[in-house]
Length: 255
Image (cartoon, rainbow, N blue to C red; front, side):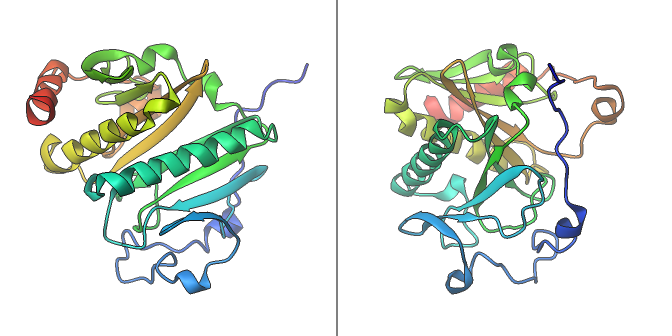
């Protein structure tokens, strides 16, 4: 049996032509010019799912979920109605790609800010079908468990005790799709906390959606310059402020 593939191949020729307006804020936003967008796969009002115009990953089907027509907005600012539409639409399309059986696994994630790995400021997520790689090989159940911050309707918000990459990783664990709106509420609360209360220099984050053992989890990760100990030695670090952060979120949002 051949060894399972673990590397994605990045097409550098396509990558060098990708637009960027997170650092270069004066550059034109391609998602604001909706009349020029092509390969629209699905829509719900201002929410669009399109084929990625710059498919830099080989052996993958790349799509972009444009969350809104407001370039300066963000998940932390959405009304509850729009928040639920965005998360519900994204989860539905992600699940459809999983059920298609065309992929080894399907990624669903969001980059926000200069340290997130993203290139476009306009609020968007990505849904990517991988032909050869199963991302679940790299995710441990332990990294999705942690200090309980809040629970409601079978949905759990926690701070990871054994984070995948270290320091602070928040997890939302969803028991049933019936309560996807509660999952969306927890996501919005954590993002609002990160951008407003967590650390004065926190301007970036990622969302990573996982489906493991029929349970959906979302990891919300503040992003800073990556620790050299993680890069060079694969040694993650944890903070001695974990219980303090849990208490602060409980006080700010749930008291």
